[in-house]
Amino acid sequence: MNRLQTRFILAFVSVIFLVMLIPLTFSALMRTFNLVEPTPELIAALETLPAETVAQFQLFFREFIPRQIAIFIIGGGTVGLVMGIFLARSLVRPLDKLAAAARSFGSRNLSQRVQVSGSEEIVALADAFNEMAGRLEEAETLRRNLLADVAHELRTPVTVIQGNLRAILDDVYPLEKEEVARLYEQTRLLTRLIDDLRELAQAEASQLSLNMATVDVATLVKETAVAFQPIAQTQEVELHAELLGHLPPIQADEARLRQSLHNLVGNALRHTPAGGHILLAVEQVNEVLEIRVQDSGSGMTPEQISHVFDRFYRADPSRSRESGGTGLGLAIVRAIAKAHGGEVTAVSPGLNQGSSFTLTLPLSA
Image (cartoon, rainbow, N blue to C red; front, side):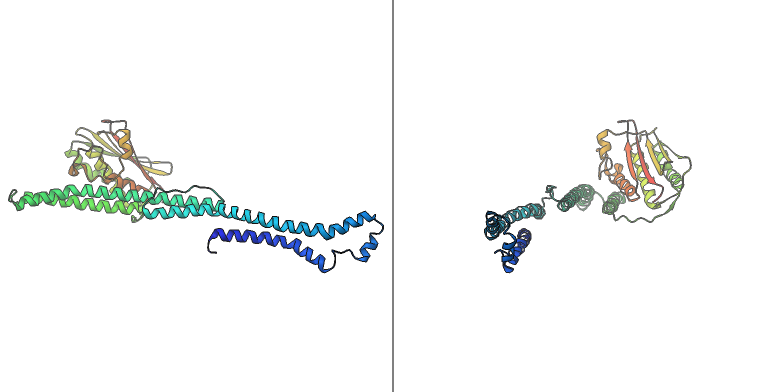
């Protein structure tokens, strides 16, 4: 009795039998009040009719009505049972498929989906299940990729540290400050990588904390350009900022925006050779602020553009961790942009034709 299908069948058959109680009750009332046998008054009233007509009336009351009631009971009960079974199975079958799909998740088969069919409620339930399954599969894919990426990225500095320490213990390398400084630099790289991973994990889990306040983006852009001027001059790269039109303040996390601009400008400097130039510009376009970082550097192919915001992606695989960064800077920029309700995009005409990154921020949070 705990199965939903059984309950549906019993409920449907019960309704059919309740409906059939109406003619049964009518027949019982007829017999109770002696309506099956014609009364003298009724016969006297029918004396004016032909005898054959009276006989037909008597036959109708004696045989036809009881027979039809019996046929109705048997036929109605059979139809009710068949229809109850059919309807119950049609209603319960999608739920059985949902249960089977849910059980398959226990074996890590997150690609399982159910067919969307049935009543509106069943369709809504199937849609919700498929949406949940898609999110779980995406989360599992992100988790596996993150573990693989972290293991790969941590292996290099750890291997360097272990190798150098082993060489020092074997007296291959002398224990001098220069060697210790190289090891210390590797630990700094590990610390930066761990910090970036922590921020990126918080952002992807929608747990990135934002200290929202009124931010003057024009001032932030100018300060970023000034901060990177010494590095640009050392690399013989021209760096300048442009403030286009009226730039209203916005509600944002100033530290996060500063980090985003530093990541974008730092990425441009890594890919711009000596003699090149970088433009850091900001302007209001409709109801958003657009911050653009354009460079005349190595550029990107369409395939590279599609992956440029992925974790640990480097357009130039030959770059080392020291010269190429952790590979998380642009992914963090995208996460910060989404946390502010904005976005970041990249375009490039092609290899060796420069690139342009645009950070779009809404004027109202």
